Length: 252
Image 1 (cartoon, helix red, strand yellow):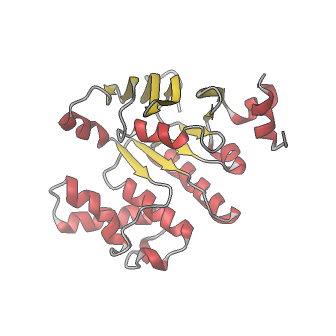
Image 2 (cartoon, helix red, strand yellow):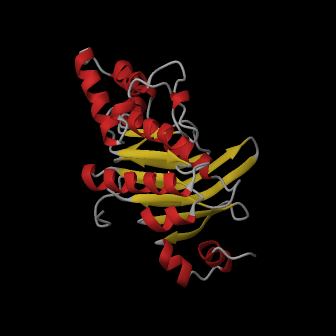
Image 3 (cartoon, helix red, strand yellow):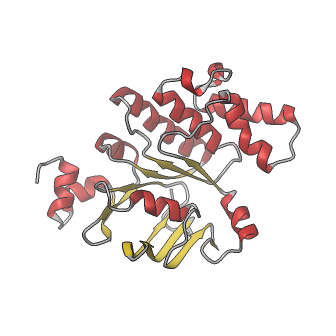
């Protein structure tokens, strides 16, 4: 990760709202290529809302969101779909299709967005499943998998079109510490071997310390960012008592 490079994601003066209720008020930050960038904060602070705006699901009240230099807020629908080919998304609960095998789930983006021969799709899907350690389980249905394996399968599907950026919403939610640690190592392996940029929502302190190049912490009371930086630096040096308590896991 080189912070001197042009940002691969740039969020500028973003304001989001549901009805008349402002959720995020005038936030700005950049994500650098190859960075593992985490969005953290207490429940209800706008983490998932922010992610949904960054992947083009919602339009903001105002502000800009650039993906690899292209503004997804102002883009027309056809252009937006082309821009969004640069990203992959793993939703909080995996969102695998229960009636499809792992192989069929991973092939789905290829079938929808490419004209590749079926043999090539099979090969690509196998490669993605191998990357996440699930090649031998390709014929299983999602219901036959553990929670951690479902998350790995969802990551494989998110990588099907070789995106530059992966968004992972609540990577470790509901998983035991050993499974969570395995997913952390997978993230580090993928960014090291493929140069993928990760934007991850998580609550898990061990994961935050293990994988984050930088974090932003959102806070509901200010409707925005109250801390930005490396978690170890924020734990020791933040001038915000709440931020220090969070990173030191101290009661308020």
